[in-house]
Length: 150
Image 1 (cartoon, rainbow, N blue to C red):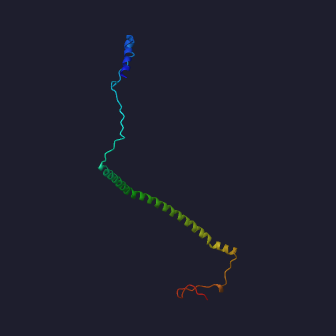
Image 2 (tube, helix red, strand yellow; image 1 turned 90 degrees about the vertical axis):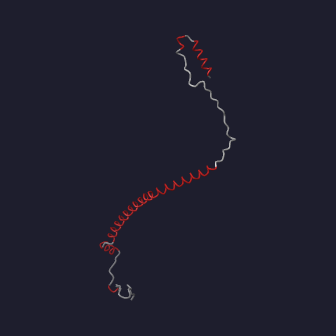
Image 3 (tube, rainbow, N blue to C red; image 1 turned 30 degrees about the vertical axis):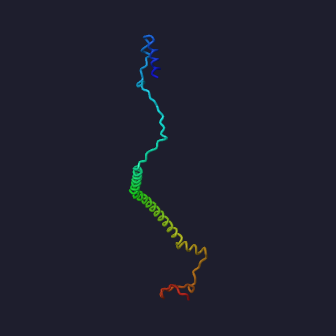
């Protein structure tokens, strides 16, 4: 490769004086160094067994597992309290919803059992007051029983 550039430089030196400096090419850095690439085949090489490497690996695995367990142990209470906070808010919303439902049911019950509505239902269904001899009053004075059949 070096000879190629030398031939080019010879051609430049044979050129007339005026053009010699204009066409001259600088030399490349380290152009005189040649690299020889040798193919290396390590197929027949067997790695020597290291008796300490197994222990080092198991110690590393144990320390990583221990660190992971400690990290989970540190983060678990915070995550649990966060989830408990969400659950508390959900229960508060449900309690508010149940209170609203109870209030609406109480209003509906008051409308349904109002005396005016009862009179209207009695007239529609032709209810009449029973005669006095058909009315049985309960007596709770004997042995704690509320009714006695006569």
